[in-house]
Image 1 (cartoon, rainbow, N blue to C red):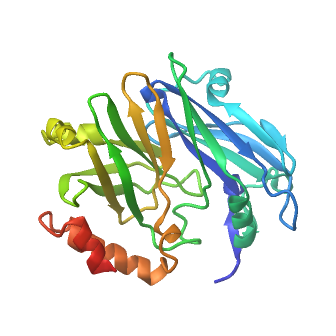
Image 2: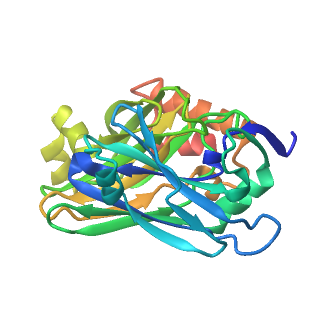
Amino acid sequence: MSDVVEDFDPLFYRPCIFPILSGYSYGTAITVNNGLRTGPHATDFQLSLSFFDNSGQHVVTTDVLHELAPGDIVKIDTRDVLKKLKITPRGNMLGIAHMVPKRFAGQELVSVTRGELMAHVSSSDDFIEFRQEPKGVITGVAYQMGPQNDDRFNKTRTTLLQAPKAIVTPTVDTLFALINASTSIQYEDVAHMEFWLVDPAGNKVARGDVTVPPWSCRFVSVRDLLVQNNLLDEFIAQGGLGMIVGLSRDSGLVPISMTMNLETGAIACDHTLPPVYYFTTWGGQRRIEANARLYDTFFADSDGLQLEEVLRVSA
């Protein structure tokens, strides 16, 4: 496979893609940095923003808002930007900070190498900050994001979600934000994920599914899942702790977990690391086979194995 990627949209050279939680009464700010200070791929960046509405429709891409030399960092409150654009957030919008090398200014498509893209992805984390309104509770999460749902980078579009922090109490809910993004604003593939809530013993408690339109963010509420299955009180009485196991067989979704205090508005945020962080041999045919085994034993048969048995069979 060639290291050079042709006809690449430079808006996605080093993007920061994030949810705007206006549907939950939060404002979103982002802190991005040009972390690659030295070396052959260090470059000056021009930063602009794109916004998509709750349905995934492209609303606007701004002009250049900031320029960042290597090592520079900038914080942007999207509430201020949206106000200047006279856009009233409705539902849970999606935002993108585009970090574009100055040498690509004004170009629609360029040639880039995988090596330079990955060098910038691995050099810095972006911090996404949520402020609950009007109470002012602030929380956030830092993460990196490489190219998503682009066959030139990964032909296997799947997502395995393993999140052992599904907490529900009388005043707490756990949400999973699922972002469906790519490397082109014209991206139009719908994503689907099936998931199970599993208790600490590995028993399957409740099953659900979610559809995520392109360029949108959808939320899975563990509390809502339990309510829909008339299991809320029982789950809380047994400790209120569980794990979400999800599988998307058609898209690479970006998951963020949010444990929310329903009274104060505080959120504990985390991203869920992909399996490659835990299994060094993950990828390629091994990834395809493992996901197929998980689906056959855990999702295709609703009365199938417990989670601990699935893990043992797949090992």
